[in-house]
Image 1 (cartoon, helix red, strand yellow):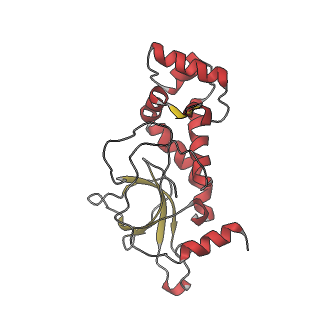
Image 2 (cartoon, helix red, strand yellow):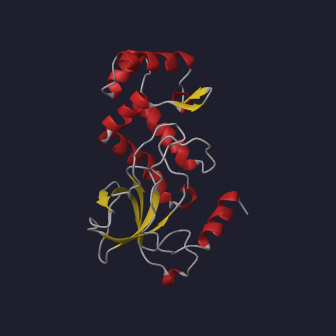
Image 3 (cartoon, helix red, strand yellow):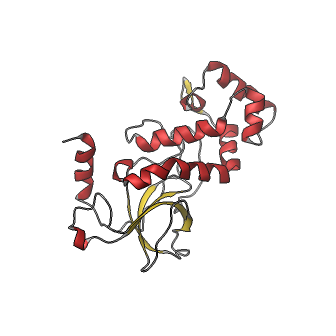
Amino acid sequence: MSDRNSRNRDRSSSYGKKQDNYRPNYNRSEGGDRMDKQRKYEEYAWTLAYLSEGSPTDPNPFSQREAVVQAIGEIWFTLLELTPKRGVNIQPLVRIGIGKNNRKVINRIKRRIGFDDLASSSERVLEECIIEIVNKQEFRFVNWFNKASLVTSRMHSFKLLPGIGTTHLENLISERTKVNFTSFEDIASRTKVSDPRKLIIARIMKELTNQDEKYRLFTRKP
């Protein structure tokens, strides 16, 4: 049996346990930056797919499965399965409220999931969804470039971005010391990093698709 199937089987043993009380870890990140002083719930998520026949990793017979929405949180990119309200058919790439006081289209957060739990339809739009989140929160990610620090005593978190070598690292640190970056375009023009937005998206995808990733700059460990 493949590793993916084995992981899915292991997860199925706890399938269906209510996960409304999950809390993202807002303590110090692996990148060395404190991202928030308090623990918080994810308030919003972006939909990946509405699965009328239930989750692909649900071990129950089809007749006993309930419809779920697979989604990704917009702060920690947490992959989730949500129970929608009756009669709701949610389209992909839609921002929805999942906080306790703003659930208009879902009843509850069913569980956290990993990349291997995603339906094929969810996988197909995952990167597009991340692009939407990054585009709409450009200031947040530009600010990360202004504050990013060491991962270890010998490695800066910038080096975890694909394609960032020593010259780019030196340019990034030098330029932000002069004045903070204000946009992705500003970063590119001042440091010769061709597409910082693309690097952020690629890093997020890597962290989501590799559950054994040692360093996490933008996501929670599954």
